[in-house]
Amino acid sequence: MNRDDKAALVSQLNDSFGRAKLSVVADYCGLKVSELQQIRIELKGCDSEIRVAKNTLLKRAADGTGTAVLADDFTGTTAVITSYSDPVGPAKVLTQFAGGHEKFVIRSAALEGEKIGVDRLEALAKLPSREVLLGQLLSTWNNVPTGLVRVLSGVPRTFVYGLQALKDQKEQEGK
Image 1 (cartoon, rainbow, N blue to C red):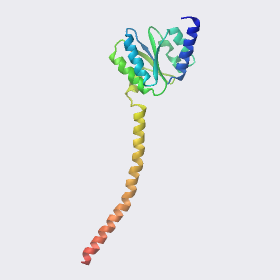
Image 2: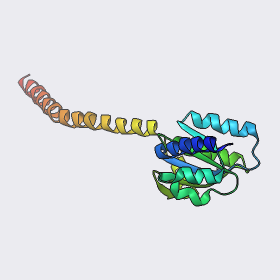
Image 3: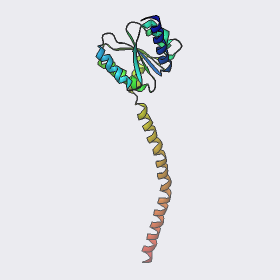
Image 4: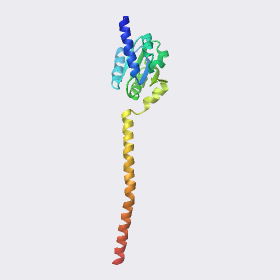
Protein backbone atom coordinates (compact mmCIF):
# COMPACT_ATOMS: atom_id res chain seq x y z
CA MET A 1 0.00 0.00 0.00
CA ASN A 2 1.59 3.26 -1.08
CA ARG A 3 1.33 6.63 0.60
CA ASP A 4 -1.58 7.86 -1.55
CA ASP A 5 -3.60 4.72 -0.79
CA LYS A 6 -2.94 5.17 2.92
CA ALA A 7 -4.00 8.82 2.78
CA ALA A 8 -7.21 7.85 0.98
CA LEU A 9 -7.92 5.13 3.55
CA VAL A 10 -7.30 7.52 6.45
CA SER A 11 -9.67 10.02 4.83
CA GLN A 12 -12.38 7.38 4.41
CA LEU A 13 -11.95 6.16 7.97
CA ASN A 14 -11.98 9.72 9.31
CA ASP A 15 -15.27 10.34 7.50
CA SER A 16 -16.71 7.11 8.92
CA PHE A 17 -15.54 7.91 12.44
CA GLY A 18 -16.91 11.44 12.18
CA ARG A 19 -20.39 10.21 11.21
CA ALA A 20 -20.48 7.33 13.69
CA LYS A 21 -22.86 7.38 16.62
CA LEU A 22 -21.38 4.16 17.99
CA SER A 23 -17.83 2.92 17.48
CA VAL A 24 -16.64 -0.43 18.78
CA VAL A 25 -13.10 -1.79 18.85
CA ALA A 26 -12.76 -5.56 18.71
CA ASP A 27 -10.06 -8.18 18.38
CA TYR A 28 -10.76 -10.59 15.55
CA CYS A 29 -7.59 -12.69 15.71
CA GLY A 30 -8.28 -16.27 14.72
CA LEU A 31 -11.61 -15.70 13.00
CA LYS A 32 -12.18 -17.27 9.61
CA VAL A 33 -12.90 -15.06 6.63
CA SER A 34 -16.37 -16.58 6.38
CA GLU A 35 -17.08 -15.55 9.98
CA LEU A 36 -15.95 -11.99 9.27
CA GLN A 37 -18.18 -11.97 6.20
CA GLN A 38 -21.08 -13.17 8.33
CA ILE A 39 -20.75 -10.32 10.82
CA ARG A 40 -20.16 -7.84 7.99
CA ILE A 41 -23.49 -8.85 6.41
CA GLU A 42 -25.34 -8.70 9.73
CA LEU A 43 -23.92 -5.25 10.49
CA LYS A 44 -24.80 -3.94 7.05
CA GLY A 45 -28.44 -4.67 7.84
CA CYS A 46 -28.37 -2.18 10.72
CA ASP A 47 -26.54 0.69 8.97
CA SER A 48 -23.13 -0.29 10.32
CA GLU A 49 -19.85 -1.51 8.99
CA ILE A 50 -16.73 -3.28 10.18
CA ARG A 51 -13.34 -2.08 8.99
CA VAL A 52 -9.90 -3.58 9.44
CA ALA A 53 -6.79 -1.45 9.02
CA LYS A 54 -3.36 -0.91 10.50
CA ASN A 55 -3.45 0.57 13.98
CA THR A 56 -1.36 3.60 13.03
CA LEU A 57 -3.81 4.45 10.25
CA LEU A 58 -6.74 3.96 12.61
CA LYS A 59 -5.16 6.33 15.15
CA ARG A 60 -4.59 8.98 12.49
CA ALA A 61 -8.13 8.63 11.21
CA ALA A 62 -9.63 8.84 14.70
CA ASP A 63 -8.03 12.21 15.48
CA GLY A 64 -10.65 14.91 15.81
CA THR A 65 -13.60 12.50 15.91
CA GLY A 66 -15.66 10.85 18.62
CA THR A 67 -13.70 7.66 18.06
CA ALA A 68 -10.48 9.31 19.28
CA VAL A 69 -11.30 8.17 22.84
CA LEU A 70 -10.68 4.60 21.66
CA ALA A 71 -7.20 5.25 20.23
CA ASP A 72 -5.49 3.51 23.16
CA ASP A 73 -7.32 0.30 22.25
CA PHE A 74 -5.92 0.20 18.71
CA THR A 75 -3.43 -2.58 19.43
CA GLY A 76 -2.97 -6.03 17.96
CA THR A 77 -5.45 -7.26 15.40
CA THR A 78 -8.05 -4.53 15.43
CA ALA A 79 -11.43 -4.29 13.81
CA VAL A 80 -13.46 -1.11 14.18
CA ILE A 81 -17.21 -1.27 13.91
CA THR A 82 -19.04 1.98 13.22
CA SER A 83 -22.78 2.54 13.40
CA TYR A 84 -24.39 5.56 11.79
CA SER A 85 -27.94 5.44 13.13
CA ASP A 86 -29.51 3.40 15.93
CA PRO A 87 -26.74 2.05 18.19
CA VAL A 88 -28.90 -0.71 19.69
CA GLY A 89 -29.00 -2.93 16.59
CA PRO A 90 -25.23 -3.18 16.09
CA ALA A 91 -24.71 -3.64 19.83
CA LYS A 92 -27.05 -6.64 19.71
CA VAL A 93 -25.33 -8.08 16.65
CA LEU A 94 -21.86 -7.67 18.17
CA THR A 95 -22.70 -9.10 21.59
CA GLN A 96 -24.47 -12.08 20.04
CA PHE A 97 -21.58 -12.68 17.68
CA ALA A 98 -19.02 -12.35 20.48
CA GLY A 99 -21.03 -14.79 22.58
CA GLY A 100 -20.92 -17.38 19.82
CA HIS A 101 -17.30 -16.83 18.78
CA GLU A 102 -14.67 -16.92 21.50
CA LYS A 103 -12.03 -15.47 19.18
CA PHE A 104 -14.01 -12.28 18.64
CA VAL A 105 -13.40 -10.08 21.68
CA ILE A 106 -14.93 -6.65 22.14
CA ARG A 107 -12.33 -4.36 23.70
CA SER A 108 -14.18 -1.07 24.12
CA ALA A 109 -16.78 1.20 22.59
CA ALA A 110 -17.64 4.87 22.21
CA LEU A 111 -21.20 6.13 22.15
CA GLU A 112 -21.37 9.59 20.57
CA GLY A 113 -17.82 10.43 21.62
CA GLU A 114 -18.03 9.04 25.16
CA LYS A 115 -16.05 5.91 25.95
CA ILE A 116 -18.19 3.15 27.39
CA GLY A 117 -17.19 -0.23 28.70
CA VAL A 118 -18.16 -3.61 27.36
CA ASP A 119 -20.70 -3.97 30.17
CA ARG A 120 -22.52 -0.81 29.06
CA LEU A 121 -22.44 -2.03 25.46
CA GLU A 122 -24.06 -5.27 26.60
CA ALA A 123 -26.67 -3.27 28.52
CA LEU A 124 -27.32 -1.25 25.37
CA ALA A 125 -27.79 -4.50 23.46
CA LYS A 126 -30.54 -5.57 25.87
CA LEU A 127 -32.64 -2.50 25.08
CA PRO A 128 -35.47 -2.84 22.59
CA SER A 129 -34.78 -1.46 19.14
CA ARG A 130 -35.74 2.08 18.19
CA GLU A 131 -38.80 0.88 16.28
CA VAL A 132 -40.08 -1.13 19.26
CA LEU A 133 -39.57 1.83 21.61
CA LEU A 134 -41.42 4.13 19.22
CA GLY A 135 -44.26 1.62 19.03
CA GLN A 136 -44.47 1.47 22.82
CA LEU A 137 -44.49 5.26 23.01
CA LEU A 138 -47.26 5.55 20.43
CA SER A 139 -49.27 2.90 22.24
CA THR A 140 -48.96 4.87 25.47
CA TRP A 141 -49.96 8.09 23.75
CA ASN A 142 -52.93 6.35 22.18
CA ASN A 143 -54.12 4.98 25.53
CA VAL A 144 -54.17 8.39 27.25
CA PRO A 145 -56.93 9.94 25.10
CA THR A 146 -58.90 6.69 25.14
CA GLY A 147 -58.82 6.59 28.93
CA LEU A 148 -59.78 10.25 29.13
CA VAL A 149 -62.77 9.69 26.85
CA ARG A 150 -63.88 6.75 28.99
CA VAL A 151 -63.65 8.81 32.18
CA LEU A 152 -65.44 11.79 30.69
CA SER A 153 -68.19 9.67 29.18
CA GLY A 154 -68.68 7.86 32.49
CA VAL A 155 -70.28 10.87 34.20
CA PRO A 156 -73.07 11.43 31.62
CA ARG A 157 -73.60 7.68 31.36
CA THR A 158 -74.19 7.31 35.10
CA PHE A 159 -76.46 10.37 35.00
CA VAL A 160 -78.53 8.78 32.23
CA TYR A 161 -78.66 5.48 34.14
CA GLY A 162 -79.86 7.40 37.20
CA LEU A 163 -82.58 9.13 35.19
CA GLN A 164 -83.65 5.81 33.70
CA ALA A 165 -83.84 4.26 37.16
CA LEU A 166 -85.88 7.23 38.42
CA LYS A 167 -88.24 6.90 35.45
CA ASP A 168 -88.62 3.16 36.07
CA GLN A 169 -89.32 3.84 39.75
CA LYS A 170 -92.01 6.42 38.91
CA GLU A 171 -93.61 4.01 36.46
CA GLN A 172 -93.65 1.31 39.14
CA GLU A 173 -95.33 3.67 41.61
CA GLY A 174 -97.85 4.80 39.01
CA LYS A 175 -99.12 1.28 38.29
